Length: 101
Image (cartoon, rainbow, N blue to C red):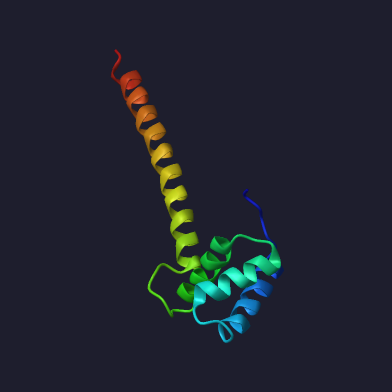
């Protein structure tokens, strides 16, 4: 089941996880406990926790803002490549028209 959670829910879950980590022997135990309280998948909460650590620089990885910028730039690059192909095709067409006697 793919369910979207609000940013407020995400923050609440991560706060609860931070508190639960103090009472549990390891992270996954705390993740399972908090996830069960909130009725969500432990994997969802684990991914959120990992993403927060990456964004805070506590874990190696690509921060969210950099990943979003890369995605935007890839999309823009693809659009520019398409536009460039259209312009190349148009210039070939116009060149043929000019070469006719």
